[in-house]
Length: 174
Image (cartoon, rainbow, N blue to C red):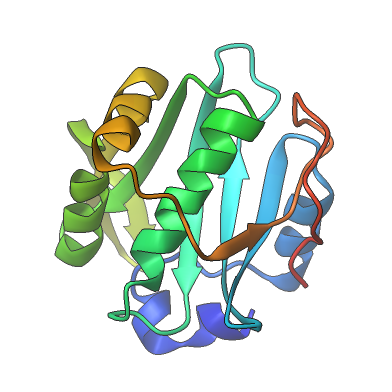
């Protein structure tokens, strides 16, 4: 909750009330993962669609306390490993604000492809903003991973009862 309250983060992320986070933590179709670095909690990731029929997981939210230090990249790589290996997803998708160029560049550098623009998809006060729909498929991720041979080194922990394999050790975010 404190991370979302940061004005720089709230600019890009829809702020949820505590009750909505509690629902995400307990929902069998969602995973609320913690991100730690050097023993310190530095962020969280929300995944949705874990029990869907189409093996498509939504990367609903990725929040990192200290942007610009490479933690977002490592977190995204670890999250994709979790989604594709642990949850056996075929597709991971997200939407991102068009003017969030930093995030879009990161997603593209990891292998996400832009699929299109969703017009007036996000309400911000009295105005509507477009969102860019992006995704990466398991074969694309595996090929990229083979070619780079670099694994994630940050801790992304959590789980959901909807995981197709037993959940990894960890605890949901507070």
